[in-house]
Amino acid sequence: MDDVGRDSFAAGRVARILAEELIRPVVSEVTAFVAELVRGTRVLGVLFYGSGLRQVDPEGVLDFYIVLDRQADWPRGGVAREANALLPPNVEYHERMIDGRGVRAKVAILTIAQFRALTARGSLDTTVWARFCQPARLVWVRDAAAADAILGCLIRAVAVAAWWAAVLGPDSGMARDFWEALFRRTYAAELRVEGGDRSIALLAGNPGGRFDALLPAAWAASGLRFVQEGDRLCPAVSAETRARAGRQWRMRAELGRPLNVARLFKAAFTFVGGARYIAWKIRRHRGFDLALTPFEARHPLVCLPWLLWRLKGSGMFRR
Image (cartoon, rainbow, N blue to C red; front, side, top):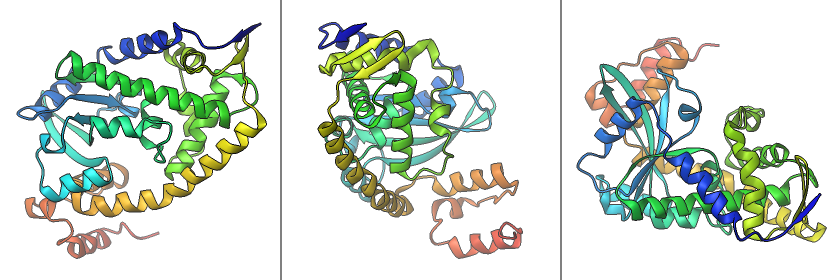
């Protein structure tokens, strides 16, 4: 049985785990898609994450985060830039033909300064650090300095996630128990539509024991003392600290609804390609091809009454 305190090597271990993970190869369609997406732009890096990374689905939608130095470094209108500055990230939908096959992706956009702010423990928004304590690949990067800056944000995301896992999780348990408790909380805070078993699915396979290794390493790096006996961990978290953390988390959970509503409202005006994305979702899940014209794709709000009429005529709204 070991009583573990601050470990001068633990931070390096977290960094090594994440750095090795970032550079693992991905399927060629992903790198080709990203190369086309960023051609002619000025971006720091592109992170690939989500279900498309965990399991390849040829008919699915890939998930990327584009990290910028400045808002002006990504081509879009002034309203979209201002909206992204106020409430990041903006989301866009892109399609490309890669080797004769259609590839689709949701692309979130934020600056490196926003990435740092949203992976800080004091952030009231849980979405970014909760995503990037999970596996990701750095599929495009400008240079070594940009790679280091992005890696630093991922290290922060893991540190924040590990701390919340300690104060919101069980008194003792396996690493998986702490991560499951954390992901149940973050999904609830984000008002996600996935089922309650989503937190378990995120840990399925636990490639290379990634989550098992990261949790104690992150605790040690932050100086959070814990006892380890075999696979079981017991963080030294007082009842007072748990109570205070519970109050802080309730504030974040309550903020989830207005943040969600605000992002939906913003997306109505800034979601580039949003109409094509919705059309794809309808086709994939209901089998109806909305077949948008170029004008409808560019102006979905103007055409909304007509689009709803076509959906009604298709029988989509029948029970």
